[in-house]
Length: 85
Length: 186
Length: 118
Image (cartoon, rainbow over the protein chains, first blue to last red):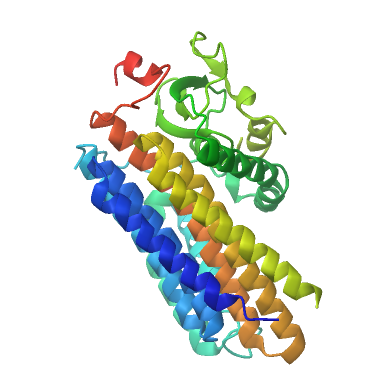
């Protein structure tokens, strides 16, 4: 049985590159925030898989902290767009 | 900008609840580090010290509503049952629905108003998050006074655009999620 | 070797729904419908890739009895939970802010929030 993890990470990275199209095209700032949020989610997913490939728990700790920090940054950009900041 | 309301209720209870919650999270994240139980002595010491600091700083934020109903561990045990059981079925249905809409592009979007009889902050919070992850709907805004939710629906049902307010249980088809949330949070 | 098949199934479900979310992000006509695709599909897909990692970690632990893999599984579970929670709340924040800043749903049969005048 072939190793499924490397192709999975490769597809996730291709999907992240596709998200950049919406990041560049997006007509409004809110569209760009949605694209960045998607990139963050896919990055966390690929970091979890990479942590398993290299047998390093620290990758998954980095993924948890990355998810929480991207959440905070999304909230602040949303506040800025909504004019509450 | 909202200034946080002053905490009602007993500040000592709020302090200890925040302390135990942060210590619990710390212990989960450092499990497997040594041989006192699953933890090493240095991790346990650091965890207690950091949790005390967190509780001293953040006790005003966690228990802001001054109601300690969620301190009952039985309610915490209901949350995994809710997430694995009825909620997960709805999430699977939601994703098949999104897949269908992405491929065929048959959409009829609109923002509708949904009434809910949940009253507590946590109940409204769980209902809004459940709506966001379940079929065809995301929460856009909440009316702070009447607890009505404004929901963007990707496929407004025929005739729904004429009704001014839709009750919350009509959004879910497999099981009655608002009833579960009421059992957990209220 | 049933665990290998479970892993491949979970991983392919996860990758498929992640791809559908990104295709929806590129294809849908306005902000709110794009958020339907990204919020639901990528959360579901990422939770399923994490579940595949957890199943593999458990099967490695049963083969080698090395507690490192249990730690890896628990941390993956925490990452998946953090992801599911933060995506829902973040999408709610973006939708509310976008509607306040005047971005209305472009093809829409009804807009009760605009009628309510918020």
